Length: 439
Image 1 (cartoon, rainbow, N blue to C red):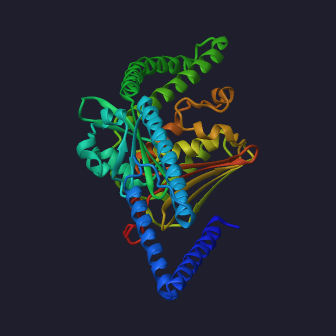
Image 2 (image 1 turned 180 degrees about the horizontal axis):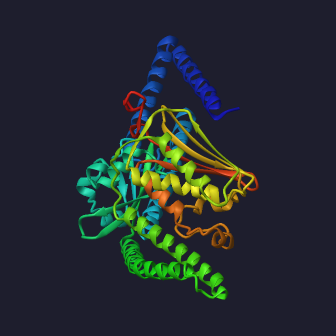
């Protein structure tokens, strides 16, 4: 039987006993009902006194001991005392966990900010206060975008894609950079993780300057070398024994020239992260031009198809879009055998414009796909040397697409071929009547 049922039965028995005693005492005085009423009234006064003692104990339970009682009141006091002990245990455990959380987050090298569903600051650790200049007294409850006002962070919030962090350049202190990322958790809440990447960005800037300067310095001597080699190759009096070495030197000089050209193009694209402007481009005409370039190669795939499912124009910088599309087509032509095929596809829908290059080439293993857009990354270095690849083409494609707010999607199956798709946002696409898809 449950304790509450036992206590209720005990209380009913006790009331009945009190009433019976009152009846007996009242019978001796020839007033049995008066005796019962008097006994029950005394019992009621005792119950009210116990109620007052319990109420006083509940108000002072942190310093007072529970009153002694039996029956229903004893059961009630016992249950309340048990709940109080359980609550105090969980409270102490929660306090310990919070203390450990604060100590652990304080030791983190990165800043951590807890945001609610409205992106208002709920809590932050010491590193976040130092990196973001936050103050507990005034910044808790303030929206994070009102405190972190850098344009890069604003665009990051507008885009809504938090899979990768964004690098934010701070005005104070000068030349300082933060890597910031939002991580969703709970019911609409978010964690903002911040890290100081100023040293990495300075090293990256030094590397970019070195590559750009070295490329500029190499361009002139390579031009001279290529000129002399071309003159020697056309000399009718050249000893036949030197024809093959000179032809190989010319090929390598052309390869070096192509690498320098790609490095200069990549350096130019990396100088700014601003969105590119531009004019409407005739995508169908550009695709036809790229097809002619492929068919003009000494060795090319047997079939180069064009699939144009939209007459929409693409808004962008022509030289950059041409460079990106040409690199994708060039890669497909290099790694597709002569009996294979290439298809260029352009279409548009409510999500924007899409340009895809598909081939029936050797394909790319899945483990290499995430790193394909890294500069100088090659799936097969030996084969790249044979085909003349620089390892910079897809890096250029990535930067061009970033400047146009677009994304690159790569799908590939080893032995069957690959498909590289550029997804442009609706605001970059003009419908047939010159209206943007975004309205």
